[in-house]
Figure 1 (cartoon, rainbow over the protein chains, first blue to last red):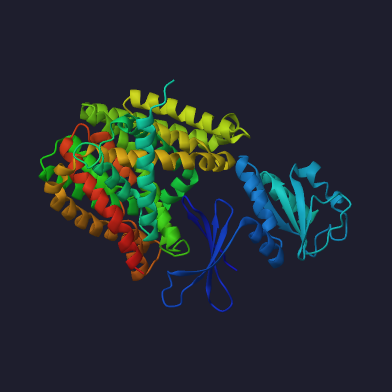
Figure 2 (cartoon, rainbow over the protein chains, first blue to last red):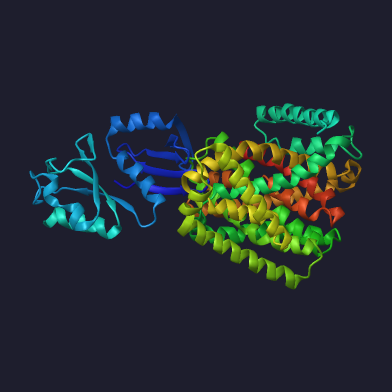
Length: 160
Length: 374
């Protein structure tokens, strides 16, 4: 699925995507932390109808209902503050050598200097996972580090 | 210390008048700026009420108002927003500049203004009001629309263009030559580049120095630094407004968020005082003969803004109605046109007589037209 991201200078960001019914959904993320959700009008494709507004906490609640990927967002915020620092998501493939093994076996921190700060599994987020945490196929690792470090972790979980 | 009762009373009466008029304007979904101007117009020389005690404060407050307007604008925008807007909308910015500055310049020339007046009037017709328009887009629920990024990008680029324009105007208005103006513009652009680098590479350090967990400390630090930089900039003829804008740009991240929070109430107060001060300097009897000219100029530049806004919206892929919405949204002129009047009005007396009613008309008509363009 394609999510189109547009910068709204002075306001925040707008995300747009088409849903399965062919409707265009737009989400405006305000810099203050609020969100507004729009549905684009069928008659005039450029006009968006505002559906509802969410305060930061309400958005968090909705995000937890819908799934966990919002976790990454807050790390992205953190990485904006520190030049050179980036956040990435890495999925554990079914053929990864670490499936069924504890996180500590990857020695990711020592080998790549990047940190695995969370594991997203099904609809759950395991924040700050310990080295004993067992990795499953389809787990998504949330990694923070330099761009090189994140790439190195990706290679590590793919190929060992 | 003796407390001046007349000062307190007159100031209080002005603020009460502003809030009554302001809430009236908001009820009809209009910008309060034109009514603030009107309040100033009815005060002082040639008006219905004289405010001898408050005049001094209003004049002092006005220059602080300009500094705060530009500071909060700088805090509002980030370097990445500027570069992204520039990448997508450089041609839109060019069309916007050509279509909207030229009518002002021609009008200034036809009115027999000198170079300062012509340059000032070109700037006044060029710059849309980011304050009025940003609020308008929120009120009309247009932030999800396709044409909206085009509108916001044009506003950002106009505001950055001001950073190059204001030093030219300041030098010319203080009697400098064209060569001096060019030199100081180069200096201002250099400073702008420096502010970009500082904000991009060391923004978090600036934040650490300025930032303080207590709001009071943060306010005093930001304001103190800004006023000093603005004073230095003004002394160098690079315009205090530009200095303040540059300080605002160097603030990023959470420091900028908090600075916005503590500065906005102060900005609202002093900007209102500034709008009153502009009205105060104009004698209502000078306005009447210039009213037809102001109306004609407003009509022409409303149309040119619609064209340039529609062009920008087309670049975002908006259809006909979206283009019309973008064009009408950009019509409103406001705080920056008034900043220009404030800078050049003293040296070109005929300028404020035509430009003040011009801004007044478009600050009212702009939001109304934008509302009608559904």
